[in-house]
Length: 148
Image (cartoon, rainbow, N blue to C red; front, side, top):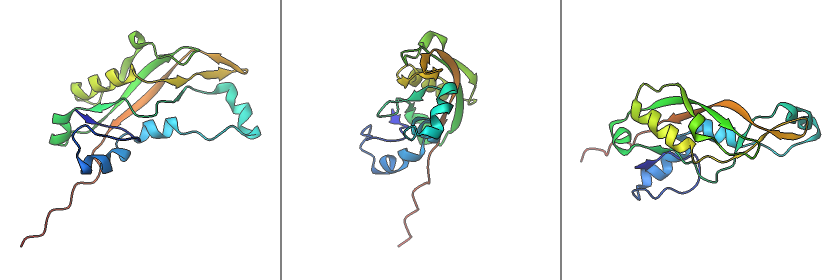
């Protein structure tokens, strides 16, 4: 399977193009997992904080046959994360389908491997349900070789 990571290394097939394209594959994962350090202004916002993904690499695997066919899509998952930051896989649901069952399944499988810093309220870690988009996109295609 090809790797739909937002950061980190990809060695699935040793494909140089894939390694260059992967950083753009799951924009939503990258955005949701990159947060700046708290400042006094954002400390108050901590009260309604949501879980933040802390995986060093994205666990979402872009199915190789769909990648090769150029099939793209966005899956919106409903996740439940406890006060320790653990995803409860049995509660993970597809809230909005990509329209491609294989992409939906790949998103659910990857979600079980996510790790989070838990949400907070009143300075305490809390359990919460929230929506997580997972975007399967191929970035720019290779330029065609010029004719001899």
